[in-house]
Amino acid sequence: MKYKRLPGRRRGFFRQASLWLGDDHVLAVTGWRFTEDYKRYYYRDIQALVLARTPRWAVTLPWVFGALVLFIVALVARAGAIAWLPEVSWYLVTALVLAWLYVSLKGSVRCSIQTAVSREELPSLFRFWSSRRAIRILGDRIARVQGTLVEGWTAHVREAPVVDAPAAAAETMAVPASDMKERGQTTRLLEMAAYFSLAMGGILFYPTAARAWFILVLLQAGLAAASLIRNERRRGPRRIKRLMIVTMAFVGLTAAGFYGRIVMEALRAVASRRVPVHVPLNPILVGIYTAGCLVLAAVGVILTLSKE
Amino acid sequence: MATAAVEVANPIRCPGCSAALPPEAIEATEMALCPACGAGVLVRSFPAILARPAAILPAEIAAGADDATCFFHPAKTAAVACARCGRFVCRLCQMDLRGETLCPECITSGMAKKKIVALENHRVCYDSVALALAVWPVLFVWFLTFFSAAAALYVAIRHWKAPLSIVGRTKMRFVAAILLATGELALWGWYVAYVISLLGTKG
Image (spheres, rainbow over the protein chains, first blue to last red):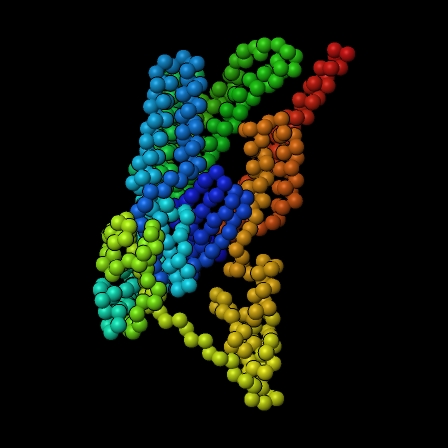
């Protein structure tokens, strides 16, 4: 059976949770890092989905990694040549912590799913925006199976007809297929920044471009964090995602090529107990990197601007 | 149109404080307030809340020797045949699972042998184990990578055919673990060879 992930996902240090839409049921996946436990709630059995705003102090991995990366950048930058970078990094760390406090206090919820025999909390739904979207998508799917309750059903529960047939409901409550594919502005900006920085990557080795490139990297990190928070990762056409994967692989491989020689020299120096000598960048690899960056950036810009 | 003639037996409760929510909160299309804890609540309710529990029909006692009887209850009349093993079962024993009627034995063995995916409720993700063994020691305890890389390779190869996550994962983690672990072992090999050659020249 094919499953489609619903918005909202909890990724802690050890525990994780997510919700998946199946053909006739919603699958709640919880588990430790290396195991998964499943619970199935069949659409025909679900009585209610309830969301309540309440503070949640969940420390999830994206926040931790975001803060950690900025913290390391701040520490490393202290010894670097760019004078303003440590200060900016500390500001960003503070902003991230404040954002987490705000989201934990004001943007958090508890969600529960109720059937005739159980009422259980959904651990993956703990932030307001993603939970509301998940409940909307899941609610529409359930309405297609069960139909909907008419307005004022609680007052007329004893004597009046209170249920609309599922077929009629399916027409009004159907989830537009394009809804999940729609790309948000954040994702679009992130992609554009990625391609532009690739283009800049080609001239990275010229000192005048380094600062601009660095600003772009910071911008990308911020946009990526915003994208993660808005949970837009699953949006967007597949070809763009593939290009992003190719881009990451290319940058990773070339980076391994650049730093591999430096690491090898360091290992040789450790083995022979001497100070490592400066290793210049391989000009052939620099050429490959520059050309690859420009080609990928061009393809990315064409794909982004072309009609889907 | 269906007619509801029952009261709601299972009240909708606030996930924050577990208090039963009033009709105004249940029917509100936007956020309403929980009267007990004051938290904003959003409820989406469905017709299943009005459904009455289905009545369980008692199994009938077999009338004569010619009647087909239940495999598990020889005195009861068979109602259906199990879709998997073909055994006749009575109304008490019949279990419906995603459109199939199964007998209790097939359900039990299906759960135990993990042959019925719809009943599976636990899996070990060996691909994540292999990848963690390949990656984590590099980040935290690099001197252990010789052992952890070997362990990652073992886990990846030994469990290559094991079922992955139920929600459809590819074998990418296994592939990544194998590549990383092989790379780590190759680096160790190169380092050991280098140190040996260095000792040889000094000797």
